[in-house]
Image (cartoon, rainbow, N blue to C red; front, side, top):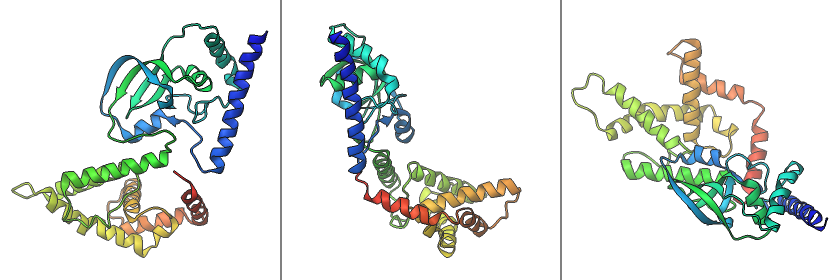
Length: 300
């Protein structure tokens, strides 16, 4: 009976700690959730994975989950009553020195995301266990991760990495990079694709392949700059605080392409797409400003 009470108390205490942690983190603008493995990898896009076998890993290095990131706090404490039965059974086994199977994790940048064994990790966290046996699959990553990281912070790091990679590869002194700034992951690779498509079309009828530099200069002069001019003249950026002209350029190009396909008309002027964006987002500007300034108060 005492063991049952102890196990029940352990879960209740862990759940209470999770609730207080969530309140505290919310009040101090800190991350309250585990990182989602799929959200992280959709941004980082690892290119390879390696099976590392059985390892003894630090519990403190486990910062996310493949499928149960909504069920546990950022400290891996249980948030929901429905977790009680499974959590208590694991806790009971640990108290009785039952050897549990190893958990299964993805390793990414020296940190771990649980594939299987979320309850075992949660019990280990609650009991202050420092290490746990795990079957490890390692994914490659050039982006540094850390405990308590938010998706916003991760996105900024990816954007910085992609911008630096573009500058290192193409050495774009011929472009005004101070003006060409993006805030979304994948934007710089998308810009490269725009330049390559432009290069393909202007290369038609040419005897020799034109260099990337020449195509990029032409793209900026004949594609990017005119679209940014339309963005400025239509005052679109005012409706989207926190975004850049580069962000709006990509959004406007996508909307422009959608309109041309929908209307089966390749001659739609870009300014019409700009006005369509303004019209469809009318009335939402004030709410965006409120959300933007609140987000600026958060500590990432």
